[in-house]
Amino acid sequence: MAGRRDFTSDEWLTMRRAMASAGVIVSVSEGGEADDMLPEMFAVTQLLGAARKGNPNQLVRELAEMPNFQTGWWHGMSRAQKAQYERDSLEAIGDAAKIVQTKSPEDLAPFQAFLVRLAEAAANANVEGGILGVGASGSRRPRRRRSRGSGEPCG
Image (cartoon, rainbow, N blue to C red; front, side, top):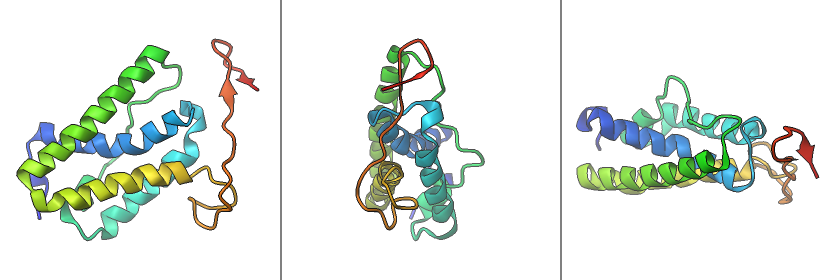
């Protein structure tokens, strides 16, 4: 198993960006705004905290040791900025997988599985009746949509 010492600083940042982005792009694809993504980000940070303490894979444990969880997403992003964020995030996820495949192929499956778990945690955070998606009835809470430019909820 590989750890922090086996990667360059740039590679490590790319892999962390992939982890931070996995849940955000799910939330964004569901229509989330920065102030409307709290349940998803809470679920993701809870999963990262659990991984720090007990994931069986050393690489995942060390990557999850983020002193502060920064997604790079902010309130008021333009449509073009959101699209660029999504492209950059997907690129980081792909690049991170290539990095792990090259430097530590035995860690690729656990790393990819953890990225999927982060995305699922975000996706399930808005399921009615559950706490972090556990015990849910399966119906999704509708997101508040904001009208363009006004900052007011619409619909």
